[in-house]
Length: 155
Image (cartoon, rainbow, N blue to C red):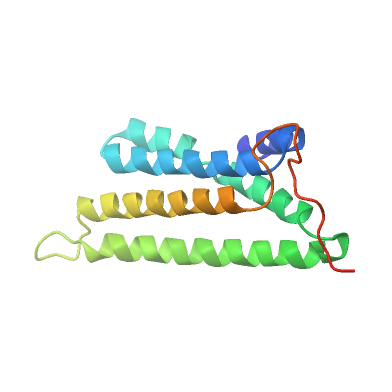
């Protein structure tokens, strides 16, 4: 997040906020795929963590939300964005923990390796859906065009 957020800010200011959000979702899919395929080695954990794209996504989504609403609605929109991000993070962590805990080594309460693999695959799938949602959302993927949606608002 330390490096990705400022990079997303520069990229988003130059070409719009939708491309960094889509890129963050796609790199997240790649990160969880690396986790699922190679979670038994240290390099895979480092590589997967390096490309998850969380900081990139947070910066891009916040700016996309701000650019999509009227100035008088920015506080409400960013508040809802923060609340939904917090709820999503909490639910995602609990769903992941439940998946891991549901697959145990026979006759023990110790999670099996397959539980982690399943959780990583499910996380990649969820980010695949997030990619589709980002693509369907406001904004353009083409630099030079209307890269951010016009400020909405009913007057």
